[in-house]
Image: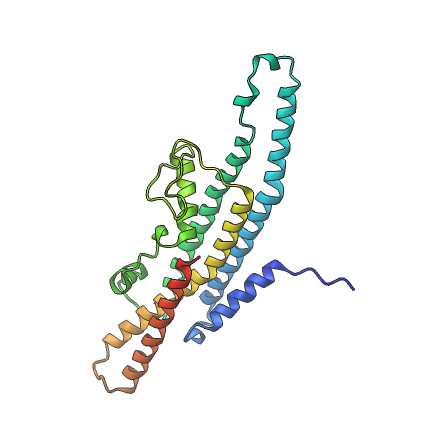
Length: 264
């Protein structure tokens, strides 16, 4: 009997749910409408990037390769071929250009996701505790962590770097700092990435999405519990002891997640 085809989206969302179940105090927002919105944001973006990856690798690239093949044949059979130096024509450049442009689209999707997650997370926790400080200010002050610093995560840095080189450097790898593995790249030649590498990078970005959401959620919890604790002056109070225990757990989980993300 033929096994039913695995649903890729279900697999991704299963991992997302598993990650959320490990978050301390997640019951705090489990039934909240904005919490559902957060879940929908990451679920939709996983599906969006997954379908984008399939579109590029299974449709755009094969169509581009066919067009390149047809163009090469037309030139080789042209009545003007004796005037052309075919060795000087790089027929593969169109294919590489398609992949480079796909990185621009991939980073755009990632950037929108990050902005949405930060915005909804702040709104979500403002319902429980009002604060003048933004989440980004809090993470900079308490963790020396800039939540929009693309260079701190290998895969995000690479995708952002390729996109910027394409948009602002005519695809030449001259933008610094360069991501891991590209420090010694020839700056006289345009960036060349094959379709297999693009596929792998999309998979890494998909793995990055739920972890980033968990990270923002924990930062917001840390901010809320810390500010609540600042309003309580009795160190022996049960509430104070409980909050300190929560903060210790959250800080440990945050460090683990950050390390995990930086390995992607």
